[in-house]
Each structure stands twice: as structure tokens, then as C-alpha cells.
Length: 242
Image 1 (tube, helix red, strand yellow):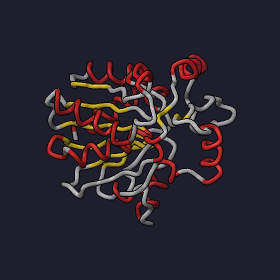
Image 2 (cartoon, one colour):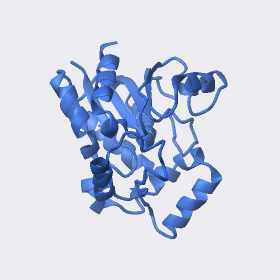
Image 3 (cartoon, helix red, strand yellow):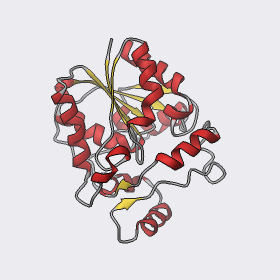
């Protein structure tokens, strides 16, 4: 049995992990899906004071209060940033960080730094003077790669349940203290592993932290916990047993 903490990406809460959670528990694992401050059922707590550090603290406090040890800390997409910081803060409690469609961004890099300038401009226009990043339209004709594998009921659920994301969780840079490194793994869905390995070899900052980590491929869209929950649970179980 392994202990999992599952951290969702932007706009989503613990509800997005429901099927994966049930499958992992059926395999005998202890599973803690999380909702971070300001999204989903905690959306009423959203405000300009919610930062990347807030989300890092959410994760660290869960691990400490529940006295979790040898944790497999899983971060999907934008959840990879607070997961990286949390592992840096409490490395003695983490067995491995698993990045699902994300990666260990270098110190000083924010999520906004990872998207092209034209996408940054579009997002800034959508935000205006506010402090929340609106969710996407969940339109598969406009975003077929990321939304691959999601059927219409799931897309409708995303349109209904996704909530705006506190902006500073996207614009604050990752900060590391230089503590003990933690083993890593990657579950790549929209990037073929051949591409990932090439980026690692070329020293690409998004993936260099995975040079010594496990690499797993799960071909689907950007939200595998919703498009391929059984396959994702099986990959996570494999990582736990390796």
C-alpha cells in the first residue's frame, strides 16, 4: 500500500480525481485528493491574497496534520508548481513527486512563463483588472489536442464545475530552498516520450529536473484523470510498486 496525495491543476478541485481515487483505493492505497484554496468548493476563499505559497501551504499542512509519510505527491498541470514547492519544504515526508502533464519548473519560473506571448496577452485580456484567471471554454474544436478523449458529458461537467483560478498561483515564480532532492516521475499524455527525452537531453528547463526520474507515457489529452482514469490509476499504481 502506498500513500497518495493528488493535487489538481488549474480550475479544478478534488472532484476531478474521483474516479482515480476510487480505483487506487480499490488497489489498496491510501489516497488524499485535494482542493486548493480558492477553487471548486473553496472558491469562496478566492482573493488577491491567494498565492502560489498559499497552495504550497495547503499541501504541506495536509501532509503534516494527517502525519503522512513516504508520500507519492501527484501534481497535475498547474498543480505541479505547488507540488514542487511542497516537496522542497518537507522532503523527508515525500517518497516521490509524480508530475502528470506538468514538470519541475526551475527556480524563478512561473506558469505564465511557460506559455507563448500571444497566449499571455489573451489571458491578460480575459483577466482585465481582476485577480482570477477564467477557465477555458472547454471547446474541443478549438483545443483538440488538450481535450482529446473527453466525451460530451465530461466536457459539460467541466463547463459546469470549473471555477476561476487565483491569478497569483499562475504568475508567482516557483521558489526552492535548495533542500534535499526528491525522486521524480512523469506521466506524459500530450507529449510523446521521445519528445520529452529529446528536451531533457537538450537541457530544456521544463524537463531537466526529470533527467533521473521515471518516464511514463499515457497517450490522451491534457486531463487524463477524466479521459483515461483507469489507465492513469494503473500507471500511478505501477509507480507506487516500483
